[in-house]
Length: 77
Image (spheres, rainbow, N blue to C red):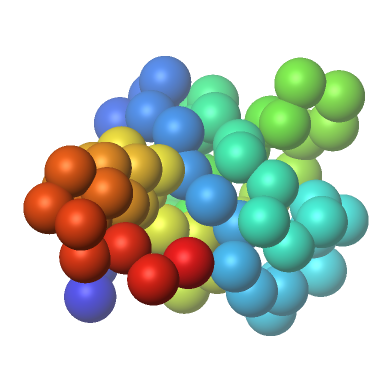
């Protein structure tokens, strides 16, 4: 699924396909778009690497889903 990202959005790294050195599970911030719309420069507060859309997931979507499950007593984590 392709999500629209903008500079400043946070995302969670869940795959390593393109050679970035972020740890899986890292929360990164989109800092710049590449000339190819499927790639971004992302920063974890220490390092900046290129990541592809296929390596990240929107942080807010995941956070909101977990909060909803917790509120509804559906969370089994």
